[in-house]
Amino acid sequence: MKNEILKNLCYTELVYARINKKLGFNIDKIAIENLILSLISDNSSVIEKIGKNYYVKNYSEEISVTINSYTYRVITVNRF
Image (cartoon, rainbow, N blue to C red; front, side, top):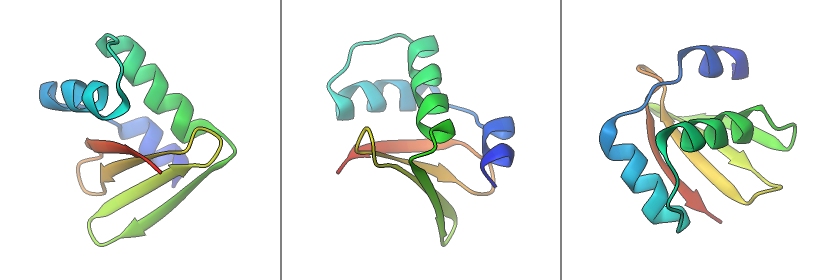
């Protein structure tokens, strides 16, 4: 499942601003994409599918990433 997500992951313009706001960052698109890739790739990440979304919980960074399971589009991130 992790490889499928990494292969198909995509973003909207709106989600870049949302990620910066939610995490308190001010980083560019490439840095955001690299951050999301590293969060998903990390061995401490757990992927769970609930309904139409994947929830990737990265326990080392304490960040969860919500991804649409049909389009593989990043929806949002949250700290926990």
